[in-house]
Image (cartoon, rainbow, N blue to C red; front, top):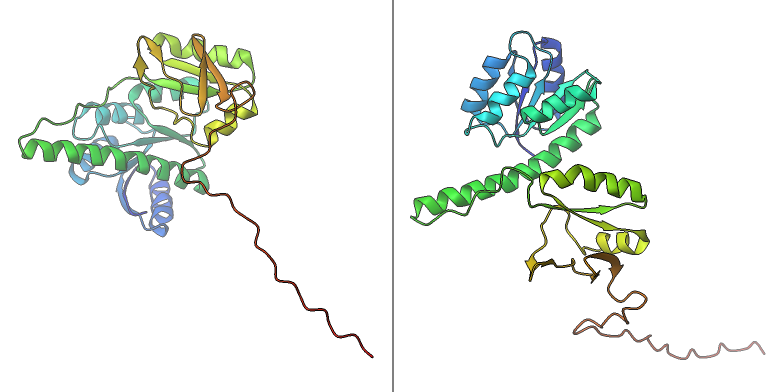
Length: 260
């Protein structure tokens, strides 16, 4: 996957090491030794991902990330903060500054490239939306509404066996206006894996109630995480046009000649 990667670090050896790793995977790489140069290069070069060191003299990574996310020209660029700090409070601070992901030093190659590929897929979707909006404006049409900046109104589908774990997640996300749905057992997880629900997509509401995702049956006010056609739900209907396979008939074999 070809993409532009901006690496920001005040230590030249770290810059060269990440540059060599990224160029070996055919990424275009630009280097910035400090925060001000990173901000200028990000606005001028429009990278696809920014790998940002946290501990830098003068303008640290938190301030750089905050300025990147506060600028409409660079706010859509994913920022991965690279840190040697293990304190969870430092990661919370980075998330509040707008960081999209974290990597711990020393950077593991497999983790680095898997995280980057995931962020690049998300950015491709965002870029397609932005291009669609710009094209609509150029043609004189009303552009599609921008995605909500927060998570209020989103739906999170949780598959967990422990009731206390599900309750804890619900309690954490509830104040942010997130609807949490639960599923229990192997049947629910199998239906989820089969495409019964896409995590992160809000379910439509009709007549004041939520609609259960395809492949599940609603029970009461909540969701009975049970695939359609499970016990008590009747057999699963046959798909239209589905054909039953018949075993092939085998030709009778001639008996071999017996020796006289």
